[in-house]
Image (cartoon, rainbow, N blue to C red; front, side):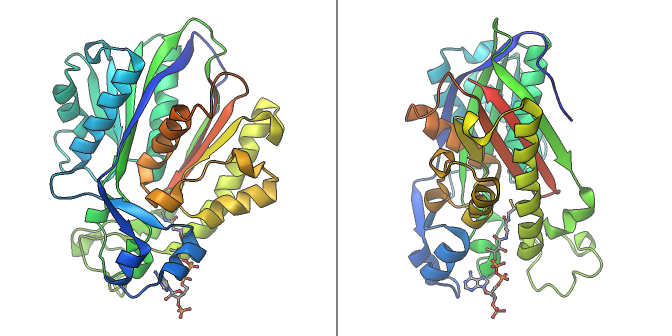
Length: 333
Ligand code: COA
């Protein structure tokens, strides 16, 4: 799916992030599961991740990230037309987390829904927000990426428990009279044939034929890491190449690459294969682990806070995740 710029422009009015206070280092994990700091760092690039306590939830982290984004944006919650919460770990399926957040922040008129595209969720939401605003159907849209995946992992499963971390990031998108601002290219992809590579079975009937021998307990994430790794390396590079080709840019024409933080080796492989300028590829997986839908908006918020990104050359955002899904966005600040 490719969108050419049409209608009015879109800008990011403000961003925010909220992460749990507890930092769980690889050394802490060594006490919980049979692993080592050295193995985790070498295979994933992760040194630590944040873990939610009992009172920190998808709702509370998402709300806090949105409140910060609203404060930075200067836009009133009551002027939000829509709140999209990208998450696969919400406390309740009904109502949506977005509904509860809208009440908490006073966005009484906003359309509210949750979006389950796993680690691609925030980019799916950002692409939808840009399109809705660009064509005049909405003026202000909040997109929140938030996960508490540490509640879904089996801590005895060392291939999964070492990867994920908790957190939230939010962005407020708003209409801008300059049509060149906002998304100049976007893709949203899926391949449902690969859903079995990462899923969350609650009952026996959820477990697909052939995976019964997998010893991970029900109620916890099951992941076939190697298969996801292969899919991610390929699609990730394809998505960046496609974004560059579609916009006629060379790798140096991009001010910043914001990649889903899933494994440092997947990002490094793209840097090497596509000859990306490494100093313009943002990395924070060492501090947060893989926060799924929260990964991209946390990166975005840190980069804006540090004033590393701003008006000028476009940025490219790329993500992939369970489903499987993958998405990209080329954005003019
Ligand atoms: N600590 C120590 N050893 C571990 C380990 C851990 N946490 N996890 C696995 N191992 C061991 C395995 O038992 C295996 O040992 P063996 O060779 O004696 O059998 C060995 O390390 C290699 O295991 P493997 O699963 O092949 O490792 P890997 O290099 O593929 O790395 C992942 C595992 C999970 C880090 C990697 O596959 C990955 O990052 N996949 C993508 C995951 C992802 O992105 N998921 C989210 C989607 S957005």
